Length: 127
Image (cartoon, rainbow, N blue to C red; front, top):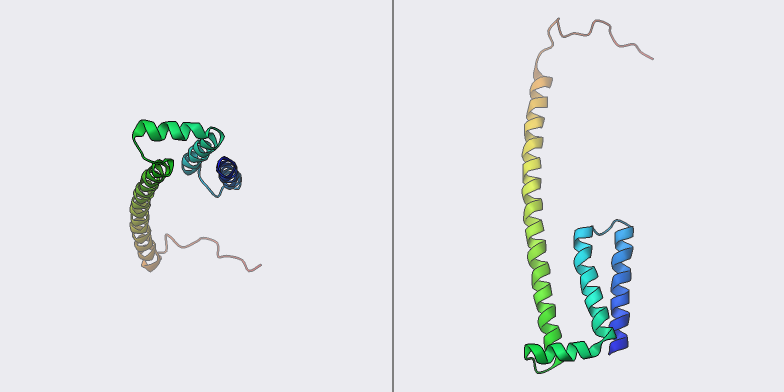
């Protein structure tokens, strides 16, 4: 079990660091995964710590504690991503409104007749 946890932690940390280096994962999201990877690594290196935590929190089995922690973490990630999605949707809506306003302004300018004062003094040359 401990070797599997250590390998999982090293794999997770390696993937997160690789994604960070390639700029495919932002730092604010990577921090959570690095903390999770470090926690799995610590529990893999010191399995007695998991047994102590199981007894301290009143769980029957270490697996029950791990599942509870995993569910809490996944709920936290889902809540955070929902919050980020809401912010992104609001930003997209705001930008779409700005584009519509700018498009309308451009169409008004293009539809306006060109007066003699606005005409270019030198016609463009054919090159």
